[in-house]
Length: 558
Image (cartoon, rainbow, N blue to C red; front, side, top):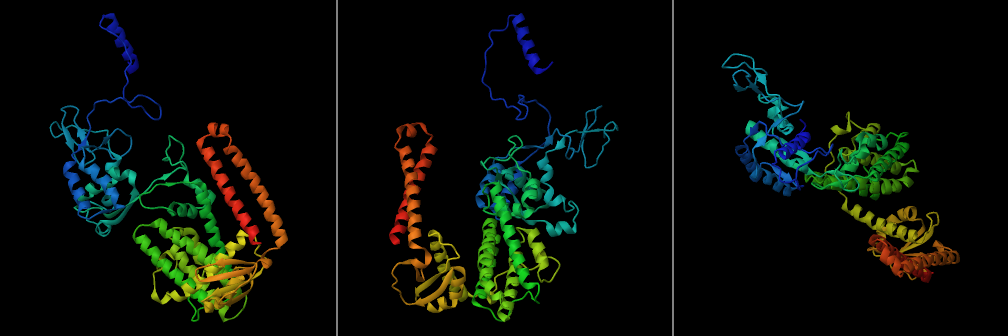
């Protein structure tokens, strides 16, 4: 009978015999199947076990004596907790797949034989034996991976070369299931721990921070993401902002941002080709370098040093962020813009700029290749190069021959000024097309004279005048740690039109503030609205007050 039918039948039998005292409900803690909701009830059966105490201790010792280390190290606690509180391991599973347990039974005399052979004959009665239908636990089989894939138990060349390996990369959720089992299996069968480092990464969760699972239906199909954004964009997203052991949330917008970076890199390479394809450009540095050339080469050199240090520490997220920043900010947004004016002339300076563009792009692609292998290979193949593939090229390393600290410091001074001027113009809504004279009061006059061409080009300056000090009425003042910069207000904006615009903006913002304060002064709103809605209105009101203060300050400055 079905178990539920049997229970009802037993109640009837008890009632018929007068043996039933009462029927009452009990609260119990019996598990249910997460798929169909059926009650899961235990059933006694014979299973195969591995005695764990003798196997656990060598695996504990291997980590305690430093033979194997965890990154981050605090995950050793999880490892030790499981091994120091280990119980015998049930390794038999009732599945249709997997390694079948090598145990054989004689149905006639009950004899049991365990053998390496795939069939057996009863040693007592001589009849064929039946193999145990159970399979080994998946983790038992996968724990053999570090050495069984290399030809073990034979003493193969591959086993001698690759075992033990260096680094196992895995998630923290399978430290007890896989990592520790590979450890004690490897030590038991080979006498050596299977790896010297266990790098633990976090889990990729959904946008709400939940673990992706079939039951929740919140997983992503990587192939769909790749079709939409590209494999490189997905790889870069998973590496960016990733710290060992920390979980990360998955958002489509992050993959889109990575795809935008790929477009940025592709467009930069197109610009380079537009300027080198008609010229005989070699992939080597020229003999003569301008300040901006030395700056980008030195910045690349130091980026390579820092990225290598980060990779050695398994700080992949930090490493890829530095490569990203170098390519996007320094190479694309700064050096290419600085080089454009030189490339307009067909002279030695232009040819030198072309060679630097190619040389730096080549090394930047090498730095990026582990994170975005497809686009870097595609672009690298189109550049002047030696060898078959970028992955065979030497990874960039710090070289004192490419270190130009003076050029870096000089360019940083000029770039700080350009950034400050851009920010101030942006705050005043001055379009880039409107040029204005710039006065620079500084002790670093030689540096600013050499960099005045860059200020003109990148900070929309019509002219740059440099001196010890200035006293200019009605000027906008911009201050950096190296200079005080003045820009005549009359050259930036039309005073009357700007006053009209600011007054319109002030009236609009004051009206919005009145609405926000009206809500906050309404006790009905405060009492009924959710706390997060009230807090949002408070934050909005604070922003509006801040904006009003800024507008009034701008009006006063006019």
